[in-house]
Image (cartoon, rainbow, N blue to C red):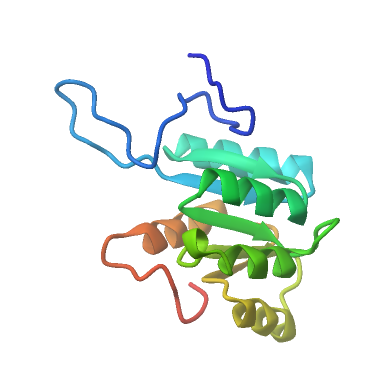
Length: 160
């Protein structure tokens, strides 16, 4: 399958937030997740895991690109590293959540910084969840699923 979107890491075709079902198949949402990390290895591992779980994935490796990709692609969830070049993850999150179209987009902070101060700073800018590295991929998937569930608010009061 040819993918015309140069930002997508998935082999799935480019489609809007909900793709039309193929004849005879139920309509399933195809959630888009933006993964932001300056480590190519982290980007690859997280992206491949999420694709295996059925999500579409786009990536960015710095804060400025994260804002640009989020603005263009309007992801359903953003996984944001905190320590990024050009614009840190907290600054990028703040800018993303100030945009009307992205205001309710859940952002999950992913960072090696596990101190209470970093967590508080992340929640103060509006993150919906906080995961420390090394990432427990199953736990990450559970958090994403909770944030995307129809009964979920997209915001959690604390960590899972």
